[in-house]
Image (cartoon, rainbow over all chains, first blue to last red; front, side, top):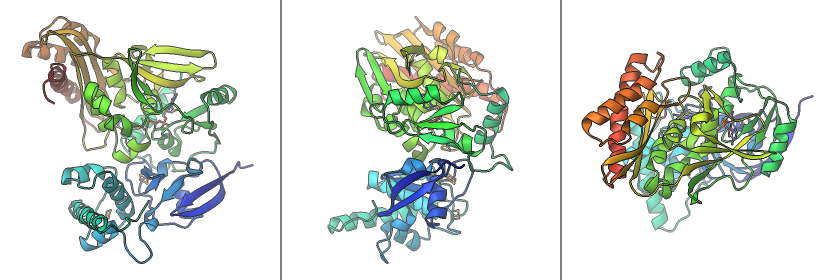
Length: 169
Length: 317
Ligand SMILES: Cc1cc2nc3c(=O)[nH]c(=O)nc-3n(C[C@H](O)[C@H](O)[C@H](O)COP(=O)(O)OP(=O)(O)OC[C@H]3O[C@@H](n4cnc5c(N)ncnc54)[C@H](O)[C@@H]3O)c2cc1C
Ligand code: FES
Ligand code: FES
């Protein structure tokens, strides 16, 4: 008999419950149980970061965490960034600066960038490059991604100066 | 001993650190999962659950191993929900690091930056920021991959490891802890609870240098050096640890002994660096030929000693 465990996880602000096998990886829980396919899988070795999500406010590689470990916790995926039709500044940045080509790495890249900007409002180029060093991109050569993050940093500062709430938990 | 067969460990070295093995899937085999709230509960689960149960800390080494089916533990005992194992503090003559302290916290700790920068150096070179969010100090040393970065620093610092079981705690010295690739002196029923390092006063300095192919990769070679100097000139104590140049982290004992009583002239540093390289036994792999890595140990030891000396004497770096 397959042993299953009951878990309750808040994903993008919604309470989700399921019975899952302990071996189910968080990324599979998100993609297959919840149909949140924005989070990608790019490797078998925890290297690429395409699967990056936030777990209780910090980035993790969701292919290297079991879903049962998220029990009682909060998960934010790329689907949780936009506020309705209004894009998050990081999404706007990728749009404006052409921060993607095929888009495979983009969801993970954006989650890593959001985490970086939460810790550091004025990152230098070097700090941005280090901050996304757990995320691989096979298309862009990173230059446009760095520009997208710089754009988002400016945008976030403006939003805060205007006293507006910054999206994403 | 907490050991894997030679074949398993070779397989892990090849697949995790070099390239994925074709035909292996990314879904781990089934296992039972428990997440105890206390240390004593975790220990009794370890005792009652058969020899192939495993502690799950950050999971950043164990889960990749399970995904590639290089290891299939029957039960995981998740220690992440146990309180009181995540701290960095000085007390009773020791710097104490809780086993569950995240690598990101080692990297950002002001206490470590100020007094034990060798640990910051090593922590900030482990994997990437996302892996460091979950990976733990205890897991990095318990996994005992010869290419893990903290073991060499722990050897240089003469660290001690506190292993706790139902019978109480015992202290294992770093030089006895790293037995072989993926093998430590921890027994199956023991949990590593604390890493402790004799507290430093003035005149101590250390540095960790790592050569890597790209940011976030495992080391081609790495060197940790920690020295204490008296009157700003003479070496009173020296610790040198090497990463990724043998079947476990290596303590360069001859180099350490040579340095005691020396003034750190260019010549003394050069002799010590060559002695350190002599203690290494690197193999040839995708990260480079053995001869190259041995040469790099000379270069890295020289630089690490210079930086350690600057730090010990209140200079910059
Ligand atoms: C992409 C990638 C790159 C990496 N690059 C590097 C690198 O450059 N340098 C480096 O050093 N590491 C690297 N790592 C490994 C990473 O640092 C791991 O996080 C760390 O080695 C293990 O810590 P953990 O807490 O995740 O341990 P886990 O994966 O949870 O456990 C590892 C092993 O230790 C045992 N264990 C854990 N905690 C305890 C304890 N308290 N008591 C007894 N046994 C315990 C477990 O049972 C298991 O066998 C990399 C990992 C990835 C995924
Ligand atoms: S899928 Fe590549 S790191 Fe998770
Ligand atoms: S845009 Fe294609 S991998 Fe990054």
